[in-house]
Length: 223
Image (cartoon, rainbow, N blue to C red; front, side):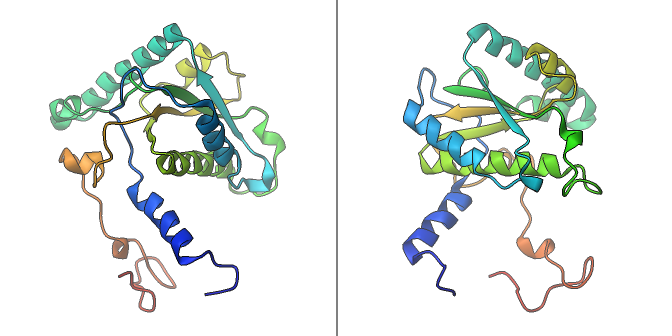
């Protein structure tokens, strides 16, 4: 412990919001997100770290109902194509609730900015660090939303080029996520895909090694 540590109560809140974050699909229809809350969660996203301080994230708020329905149509089309690609699990997948585009209070599209090739610092050998930076911003928004009692769902079922065209993005910008945000009926105690029996999370010990790939860690075994 150092003098820079938060208090035990503050640390507990941080760890709690991380453990209780869920990828939400079910929202309270007709609900709203107050302007001050929306401003706070967006500011938290904008406070994310980024390689070379390039801040490559762009947030497009969708307030036009017709546009929202067109985005939903893209998502639903990809849902069917994904089911087809899953082969034997197609019908099982189609039974899953995978998005809340039409029900959520707020809908955002998050994109990588245009002109990214101009940023070399930290990206010369790892150009994908711009995507990592955008992911950090999304996670910040996700956690702050949970702290405000809001649910958020990350939707990745869409054709990037068609969504970019629908939103008149520059040619070198790239949509990364559709985010559904708003009040939810409840926060489940486990990930939805576990509750649905689709997939199950593995323990941290499966992912921590020491001094080389796959070498079990000895000094910092998780509890």
